[in-house]
Image 1 (cartoon, rainbow, N blue to C red):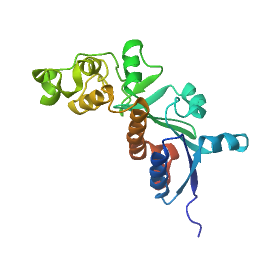
Image 2 (cartoon, one colour):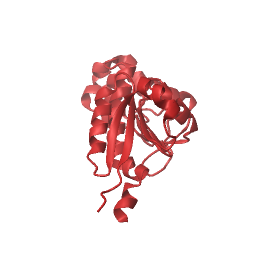
Image 3 (cartoon, helix red, strand yellow):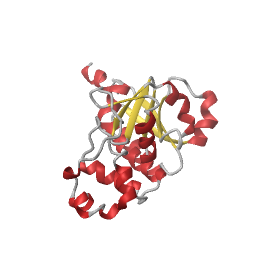
Image 4 (tube, one colour):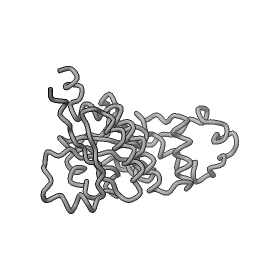
Length: 218
């Protein structure tokens, strides 16, 4: 008897994303019908002329970090978004990436470049909203001045935390404030949010993308 048909998934990753790529490759390869390989951006560019258009490829990182994925970013109109972590699919290509706070602030000011939706398909609103101080921990509440993040971080926070359906949770608020304060660089923010996006894609997007559910049902 023949075993299951093995689908191969390439994970293309930029500099600084090796750990994320390795974890993603390992998780994908745990599936009986899947295998995975890691390609650097340079390896992908070298092999692109002979690469089948039907090849399954996951591009890690935003356009800033993974420019070879730009053609697919340009064509994808709807992206799953959760607290700065994003993923989207278009045929055999998938984008898994994270956004930094500066980008989210830009979305709040001038709107996003494409439609971002939650897991239920509802559009995400990025319009800045004032943060309700009573929902925040004491360490960042107005009752203690501006807390350990300082006034500048607090003011930026009010425009950077309307991340999920226009409502900022206390956990998201603290995380955003830490980033605004400069504890993480913008590139670090994108990498960390890409880690989250990778986990979400494995849990919610991979099976549907590759048709694994249909194969199991069949």
